[in-house]
Length: 467
Image 1 (cartoon, rainbow, N blue to C red):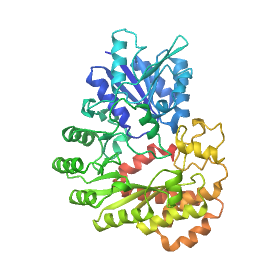
Image 2 (cartoon, helix red, strand yellow):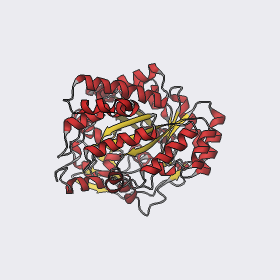
Image 3 (cartoon, rainbow, N blue to C red):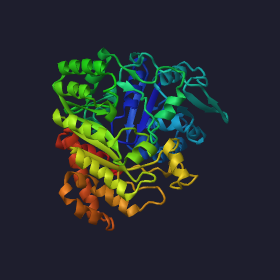
Image 4 (tube, rainbow, N blue to C red):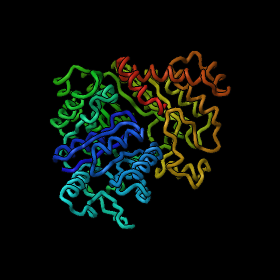
């Protein structure tokens, strides 16, 4: 059997890691996970475990940190290093980094199984689909394999790699749908969908029976709190959704929360959720400006539709979180306040705001460059990785955007004090504004997912460097 060590810097449940764990173990290979960024502890584990290959699951916002660790590992060990996840899928040129030997583009389960089989049997792995492989100064750029269809063919997720770690304090999470048919300008989804054009059905659902297995696996590992369904397409196939939630109620009495596109929050959808044990839903408002939302973000729903969504949810006693961005290219101060105002009108239970971060390879970066908000040389090395990162766009008032973030949630949940908050935003950012933001953000985040206090504190403490 072959052995892989995966290194993950963030203390959070990564479904991609758990699916790889399930795939590797299903074929008799060994999987080890290291959580954290301490290079001395990483080196000690590598020396002890003597793996055949070392892997990193990489998101763009953490790339610089992960590459730095990879460089240190490569200096001390002559073990092949593979990068997988969203970043190498979109930015495969990272294969040219000295410490990276292999990248995996797209779905990784079957590619990793094949790679470990080749390592075990001492066969060449230069032609494995989904992998780009560097060998003797040459890069083998292999084609993508077809998408797994049906989705049930993928080995069952295995969250056991997070046992006895702070990640176990997270709510149970399940990922029952892969792919997305929408093309938001700030998202990688369209780029990934285009990569897989002609290689199968991009949006795929697990069967009901397999979905129940996935839910049971999450319940086995994580804290006793509401189950999070991580996909915003639940309202697309209402028959499947209704069947799933009916079966769900037979295996656990835990409430659940899920993500929904505003376009999918129909009356019929809400009725299905209300008859089951729905704790809350999360929807993407993104901006209160219809101009920004439609022309810049490619989110094609009106403020009237958002109000109708809120009314349906309130009428059925379903609480909801909204996701919002500020500091979007071409956005004015007035339009930032339109985002706050639409949330006030919607009577949002758990508003959440973030400063817009452009991701290389997305359509909105082209818009930002064209409008002179980004330089032509903008790259992933410019991406911040904390929730409190300020805008990296030019032509923006950085102090005002930071303060707007600090008081974004407060302006929505305390609308009577909006005038005072507007005055505060025009001051210089300071530690008291920052601490107030942390207090409100933590309170609403915990309430939105009904986390127990102690597990929540442990989870936040583990990830404090990303705050």
